[in-house]
Amino acid sequence: MNFECATPEDTIAFGRSLGRELRAGDLVLLAGPLGAGKTVLTRGIAEGMGVSGRVSSPTFVLARVHPGPVPLVHVDAYRLGGDLAQLDDLDLDTDLEASAVVVEWGEGSADRLNTNHLVVRLSRAEDDVRTITLEPHGTWHSRTPLLPTR
Image (cartoon, rainbow, N blue to C red; front, side):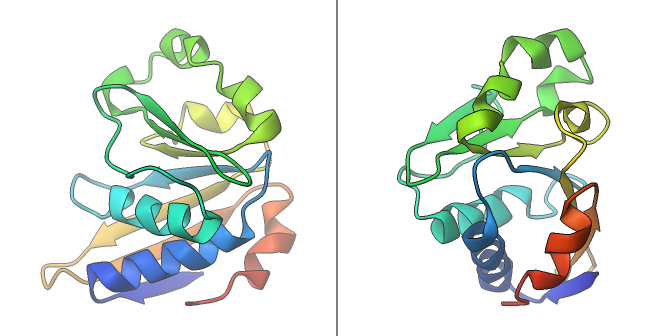
């Protein structure tokens, strides 16, 4: 499934739609190059989930927890460089029981936390239009068609 987002506001709106569908135990992996819009998308996810706290890139703290009806754990695995031991130290498998977990740069490492996960791949064209591609795994195959486009 591919979606185009012409503006950052479109990316936030798409994230808001996705966030409304997330529940405790969900794992979402954001993939894409620097500047593709992963953190902007996460801001929308947080809005859709109704969580509190300013959403910014957790690059230097690795993970932030945003309280809400279903808490959002926002992780940036960029600095981990695929170091699975450091990822284990974050105890994300414990967080998955009561929270939705969104991991930037988590493909190839955090995907092992749950076979049921959604990869959201972002790419950015020269005109700044973002293309979002959803890659469902496990139970996400049956949930992805239910996601609204806005």
